[in-house]
Length: 245
Image (cartoon, rainbow, N blue to C red; front, side, top):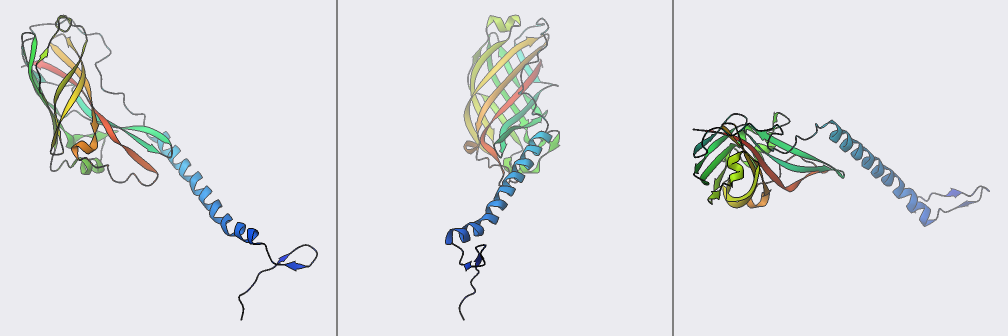
């Protein structure tokens, strides 16, 4: 027997075969309608997600409040104290919408040494296992950074930094310094842009470091899904409050 053939009624009760174009059109229409519906749903979900996600915290920087007049000598060893923060900032996108994912921690330690008008040494560490996003721990982040094997990131200054009279007098200064940044078992040379000032008996320093994840072997956190993605680079930033030892 021959295959079944469907016929169309032309309105005059004279039946004719459907054209190849019409058959093709009917074949693809449900698929096109379904794809359009999925796209609309995806855009709606992405929009709702970005609306519900809290606005990303501002980049870490020096306090906006006026600093107190410098007190005491600047020479000596300065230790990281309460109020210090460090974290990261990476761009996330979903269906052409974007938002910053920001992780923060107060698990910051370290010190710097000043002799006369020079910073002769500085070393700081950050507890990566304590990073939170919107106040919550992120298992995917810990997996990506391999915090079980490498729980800390560290920075070591590799140059002597000259202090200006403006800094000694209490004004804000901006410098670019060189150092080694160690994460995920890998150490890379970095250039750090910092701003610093004296505030009473404290020193405040804020800065940022561009981070290309591939340099440190950092993989993108899993779970972004087909509708979302994370940038392959980000920014590590910090705000330090230091007091004389």
